[in-house]
Image (cartoon, rainbow, N blue to C red; front, side, top):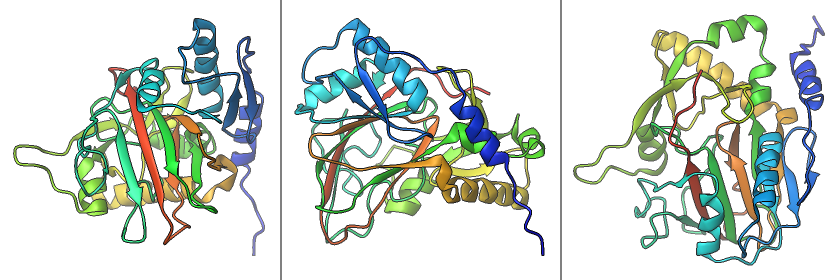
Length: 302
């Protein structure tokens, strides 16, 4: 019996911890874990932000990947104004569909309600949002507007570390491969949603390993909700490789952080370099939320 243990994850974490860290002039940033996530103080999102605050927030999201803003009493318009600083607001193809959204009047806000009658909830699997789009969301901005007394956390995983912790042989296999991200896989199989007449759910090919536009670092860009197959492999090979990567992401707690929600919190995350999982541990209690998202007019690049 062998007690050999692979330390690729430990060396990846050590390298991550040694990265160059930014300084901030207009905000305070308090890390929530060594791996990802930070609380930001000194910002009132109900008011316009200064250029210095926005510059610091951009540095913080590149460094921490998930930012939590507490005690923010904001309107939907405040929510969207903040998100617009980081790209064009996304309009979800299921924005008015009963299978997912509880909002049919604002196409730039994806709203959902989970209660005792629900048989699924949005985000109850490891995923990145809407990666089936040709230009996927890179920034997501979520408010939870009704929260159970206990539970309902959102878990996040660092996709830089998911890539960096792989062996060099596996990295060599993955670099240069592309995979199909299919909206039907997530929304039809997951929620029972079907396209409206004349509509099709998007399906797009993206690199399995991409290089981030903010940091230049490589990250793993496949997720179990949307990624159907790797184009250059046979189906059997693709299923085996994707299964390996999906289990690698979900089992490594050292790559993950759980965000605890409180009233009037907003969470901004890098949707390319992270995955997230809405933890449905509060049934039959209710949890409601509203999400705005931004895209930048380009897709992840290898």
